[in-house]
Length: 436
Image (tube, rainbow, N blue to C red; front, side, top):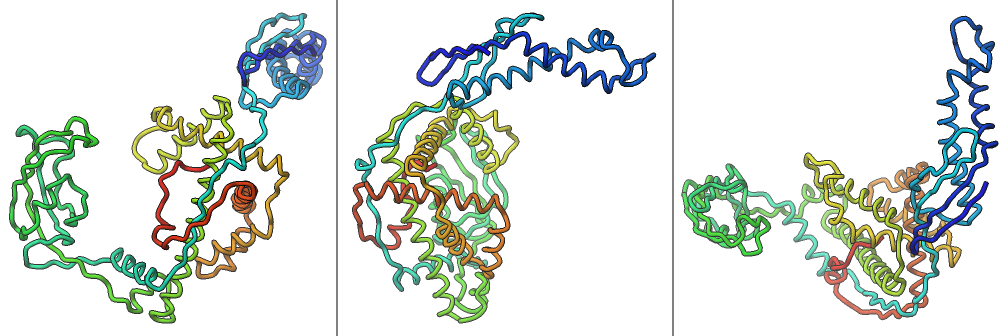
């Protein structure tokens, strides 16, 4: 087998492979012999069909099959021989394809970039420090109460924070527009769900009242056909309901699976969950900063095939998340390319750090992470056992731990400063790109 490789770009390779005719004929004959043992041809007993008859009937198909298999086999042999690491399936173009002659084909493909991760000392990380105080738990209890708000009808004028049941019809230039009308919709005044002026225009309204609101869509409204345009909404108020916060009693605690311990027991459980959330938030923010630093210090070119594969994964995730009657490939690739490239680059960098430092998942940390996740459930022992009985789930946890070990490795060399902040600031989502 003859192999030559041409570098057509930083990552693209054009490999020409020559396969001797003898090897091709050996593979063709092997397939014909297999066919002869099972072929059923009128006038001949099974297994007794003359080879010239077999060859006459089946050689074309056997040759096509042999050539297809040989291209796959020899491509793999060639990349191993040339110490190449393909990043995707090759594009194969036969050059010589005649019976009795050597097969020659050209395979064009991308390879993984070869690099070493550097710049650890240039990575700057601000590591937040925070504690969960009694006042933080009090605030969380109020949030939980508001999340479980009930609304009861009242016979008075509407106020902010009241929930109205309304019918409305919106018109632009006297014509109703798509999406501008609804019946029986619930709206909490002050929620900011509607365009400016809509909710404010209903303050003071009573059940059975009709109001006409003359408003304008914002200039930056997402529907460009309506952006900046004047509109008139005719709104009928069907009912007015005021918010009723639940009492902190056993019935409320039971909603969260807490059946014993009363208020103090509930506060303890809420505090534990907040501590868990705090640890995860701080860890996540540190990880994002580490990944951003590694990206900045290690600009690498990545195979287009890998980006394309990641774009397709993100398309599928988007369809699964948002639903709708749309196929993943109908979503424009450019919507996902930046995020896909970031993920691919980070994946390669993380894998290289693992390789450079010969990292392996710390099984003690794996168990610790599983136990922490399980502690949020009523029967944590069963959750831990479930993970250790499911290899796929267990390996996913191992991957998370391995990524944490990569972060720890970088932090040993990075510029790290600690900053004391409040619980609220520590858990507030960071405005940062999504990590790998």
